[in-house]
Structures are given as structure tokens and as C-alpha cells.
Amino acid sequence: CEQKNSPIQGNFKTKKKTSKLEDEKNKEDRRTLSQLQACFDKTWVLYLNQPEDINEFLCLACKQIANNPMEMDCPQHKKMDETLIVGESFEPHNNCLYYQSRLAKRLIGELDVMCPRQFEQEKELQLLTQQEQEEGEGETSG
View (spheres, rainbow, N blue to C red):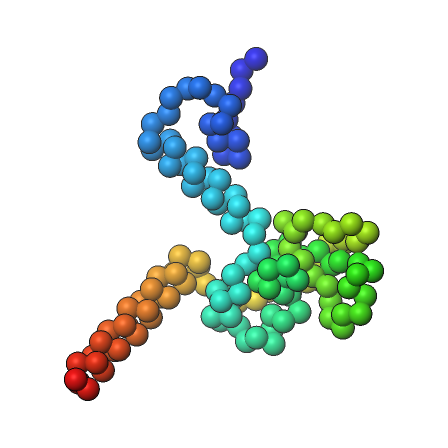
């Protein structure tokens, strides 16, 4: 029986020796997969949106923006006065029902966002600028 490796499986079941480049590629594929399933970073989404635009889409579990939002109907949370939304990768509770929330998914998809890499670069640039300003203030006061 011949086994084929997919990005999800990596090289876990084979004894074949792989190059460092292949290992890095497999790590990147697994990281990308987990990022695709995780909820969206609230800071990233808030960069181009207002808090009131995202409040209805916060995952109950992680307080980030739900990715593939599921609406939850749960006796334990009946008293909560908000829409119960969790990301699809959320571990289900016992006695709770989960429904795909197409409306929330569409509205989340309509939020303005920038490229995640560009966001990270701008965040780093802001941090460097802030550090330089603080260092400059320290030099003038001392």
C-alpha cells in the first residue's frame, strides 16, 4: 500500500528522510491550515472597522472574530442577551445545538480588511516608530 503525504498529514507516517526545505514547507502548510480554521484576529479586523461593526461576530470562546460562524442554542447560555456565536473550530458543549450562520458569515465577509502580512508589517513599523519617539523623549529630558 503506497502512502501519499498531504499537507495535513505531513511526514508523520513515513520513515523517508526529508530535506530541511521539505520540513519547513510541511510546517508552513500545517500552520496555514490551523490559521485558516482559527477565528480572525480582532485587532486585525478593527484596523479598518469600528468596534460596533464587529461586536455581533465575536466568538464566545476566544473573543476574536468568528471564522465560519456557528450560532449556538444552549440551555446553559439561555439568559445571555446576545447572539451566541462561536467559530467553527470550537469544541462543542454537551446538550447544545449548532447551526451554520449564513448571515453572520456573509456580514463578516463584507468587513474591510487588509492583507494580514501588510497588517503585521504596519504594526511592526508603528512599534519601531513608537520606540524611537520614546528614546528621543528620554534623550531630551535627561
